[in-house]
Image 1 (tube, rainbow, N blue to C red):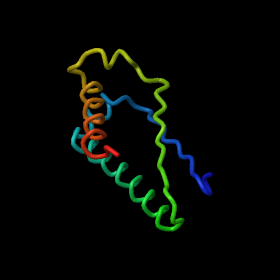
Image 2 (cartoon, rainbow, N blue to C red):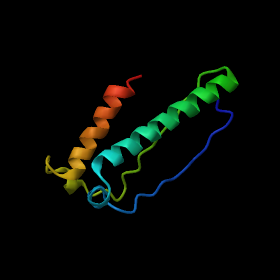
Image 3 (cartoon, rainbow, N blue to C red):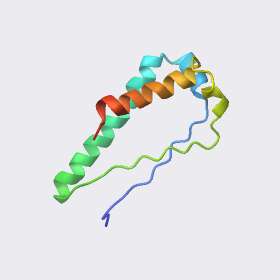
Image 4 (spheres, one colour):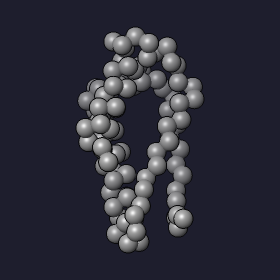
Length: 94
């Protein structure tokens, strides 16, 4: 049983296409790496304090996501999704 938990909500108000028009794609991916690193550090700190295994759960709420953006494999949204999957597969395998 969890002794403590936190629920946070980050609302995406703009589409990925609009974000990467303003911010370079590499910065978006870097921000994602920072988020994953923060999760890992929080998990390790919780394990250190409690002496028992800890976990981080990240739920992606895809409501409002325009699926048609992902139909074209060359679209920015599709490229971004592939990069996120690659990040998960290469760096956060466990």
